[in-house]
Image 1 (cartoon, rainbow, N blue to C red):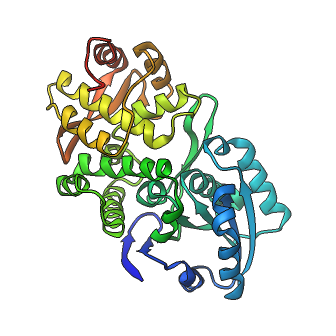
Image 2 (cartoon, rainbow, N blue to C red; image 1 turned 180 degrees about the horizontal axis):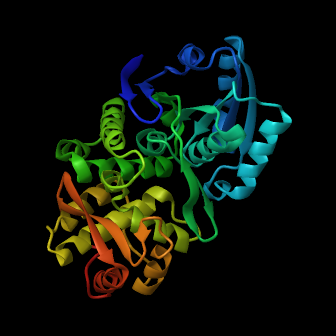
Length: 356
């Protein structure tokens, strides 16, 4: 049953359809947007084993010609080699600009498929079918697409909106506790930056999945509509990400995205009072611990600082970080990179109780 349809007005307008057990109706939502075209599904090995054949059957039974391209599960697959392999596959199968791609998976699949859609034949339509909580509330919405390169995460990408996001929350039933928890970090992020009421709901587990996904998507939709190309307000969605991406990179992605963002949010909360803002760190620690996050940071200020220097949010000698003024109210703070380094040294010393 469809729980909610959320409309996005951006450079390409589209709907985000959220519900439980709605995957069997997917063809009826795609056809008005694409016509009777060919569809190429990009998915990963984990999702393919669970749902890949089911999606192909749903599409072919509805009269679509559907192919499937499977990449190994994991962040390491969000790379240039897989991007080129997928583009070559599309070309060899003679996909045209009237055809469409489907991202069927988590954030890695969605980012890789979206960038492929932006590049192939200078742009083809694509549909997002997120299968993880993290992808549903964050990466499938808003049109950011990217791959990682050795120098850093998400450094090669494009803004390219899908024609549809189709979110069946039942697909999350098979997620491991660790992968589901990754998504919870992004959900908590939304509460801290813009919705105190959502934050309070998250303090009472378990939460209603359809409501929480819808609320997070509405928040992101509202931000994206005001700042699609990330020149200002959209930066609030990066709360915890500047530090989190550094942790991911330093761990060679052994620390997952959600786990790294949780650590990053705490570092940002510890930094806030040093910049004249409020101290919500202890409260945030309590909630993150409630969801099972390990908040220890095994890297020095020097290591994190060096990793941050390649961050996309750096502009010349300055970098913008997101810091809380209160729960539900964050702000963008632009700092000289030298000042950021000094702050990192303060919050990452052994006698500073950032691990609370």
